Amino acid sequence: MKLSIIVPIYNVAAYLRKCVDSLLAQDISDYEIILVDDGSTDDSGAIADELLAYPQPLPKGKGVSMKVIHQENAGLSAARNTGIATAQGEYIMFVDSDDYLQPNVLGTLMEQVGRDNLDVLRFDYQNVRQTEAGEYEVFHPNKYPHQVDTCREVVDGETYLDERMGYACYACQFVINRELTGTFTPGIHYEDTEWLPRMMLAAKRVNSTPIVVYNYLVRQGSITQAQGNKEKLRKNVNDFLFVIESLSKQMTKHPSCQWLRRMISSMAVGVLTRVAMSFYDERKEYICCLQELNVFPMVIADQGKTYARRAWIINLLGARVYCWLMKWR
Figure (cartoon, helix red, strand yellow):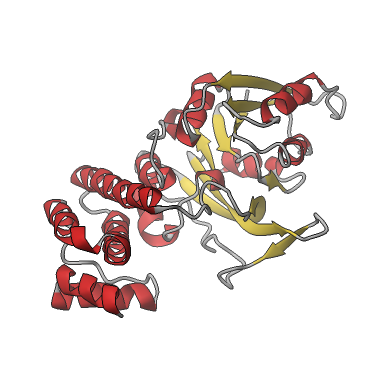
């Protein structure tokens, strides 16, 4: 089997059918869809079972298999890991269950994977939202319609990270050789940022395609968009620290990887900003944690004017002064 598509599911009854329909409306054969119901409390699990029982609306001779796995709620990473352990395909894709693919795009992706003998192929995506009428429309919240580099040269994973990756880390934006997929760390936010360099730094042949394959639904209440209370904000900061530590450990194995250095600095600025705004009285403890992780001085790179200004202030005046300025600005 050539491709396994892993779909973690949690309380997405309103979106799941559209997601699965998009996975079936493709122009390849011999692939599997793995639906992992992560202890949903709505009708998502039942809908997944119904989809499995439906006569599949596929052209004759199209070999698609679908399986449904039900497990106790353990989070997005654990659901993906269950799918990885079950997958039979040579390559793996991840699709979140409230998102969907463009029709008839997987054939072009897999053709390029085979032609270039790729370990990893990155493709483009677009943001969509639902109108009041329930229709889907494309929008560009960052004013940049294209998210993928324009270079078409096959390179190794470290070169791709350093020269072409940027800072947005989405596991759902790749076709990956199953042997390089690894696993996701359960129980943390920013699991894609922690996972991505581990996967990429093991890859020998990586390339991109400008084809828009993936539709990312921006909605209130999704995992990445949810607004948190004080407890959730603290977990957010602590997960930042966890990922920084993981990236720092990866740097010991790949000391020349500039992307790791830039991402560590970017996340460290994020920690200090959140601490200043929400946990100012604990700033000394958090600054000590960052010092132990050797994040100072910050790398000032092409991450936008706001980041550059904040990193410059931290380097010039120190982390404590930066927290004070952010607290009382």
